[in-house]
Length: 435
Image (tube, rainbow, N blue to C red):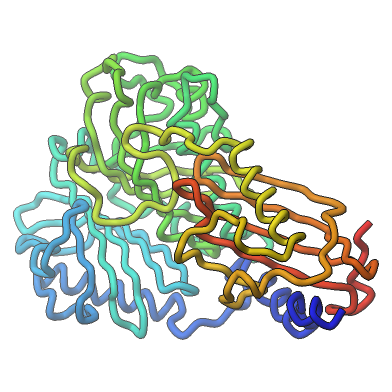
């Protein structure tokens, strides 16, 4: 079985490293970073100083930094304005692991007016690689505006939680995703309630939109609005979660929204298409508080930033390869493995293939002696063309191999194959129990 072991080897050291990485990847607890929260805050301070001085030269932008204002790519001088005088209120969140920061501010201008200014920074080596800003100057630009509620920073968004109370990165994103899923599906058979604590408050450009009479509708909580289909007909696209702060329990998400195709608005505001930066304060996997800034944005204009995941402007794209179709690709893979013949596998010309984390040619992931698949479990995502499979392969000499396989299928061919493979003894006999 030397051939199989050469192909499907996972050393104890590798698994120990994976286990350690997984443990520290869940939260920021006890983690150290080249630029910690204090370091990132100094970069934010420098950005704000440049804003107040209307001088981008004071800001540590990296050469070639990508800068946007209200989703349009701009030069550094377009990020600021000459009337900015002082900061009235400011909320900062950060993720030191990746150098991400998100800030919501109220800026006092020299003429006595106030603007809402939101920005996100990507920092590396104390230099700003990305700056994404939103500016709302009046009610016409954002649909809603109430500066009275924004004169002080809301502590729900800028207080460090005790380590035992901190949710993981994944739980935080899942809660935020639950909100947008409920927003996008309320009033439809696909609706699933969002994970809300009772009496969640939501401010949009400072305007309270929960538990108050709103646009000729009676007071309703955020949960009741979704449950009764108050936002039915709206569509969310270009959804992102660029800043996830585990220590503060806050997610900064960006999205664009408008009406779904063919829907007639039941109130004028529903017809607007906007860009929104929404802060979610999350506790124990549930949304505790919501504070958003939004600005009008023509739906025909593209976004300057790549979405993480979610529907397009027209909703989810039609499924071109359903579960049965994707399962046939998995069938083809294991037929090719048992035959030890790569020729029958429908792969793209430049498909990426990895084995235990290393890029390899397809021939390297098969081995002589694979006789049959004794056990197999499949999971698929039809929307994205993703498959995940776990198998136990019985070999000609009676030994067995465990394998995990991920495929990405696009346009009728496999463009990605990610394989993890091991045999008894590769990681110690104690870590083996196929039954």
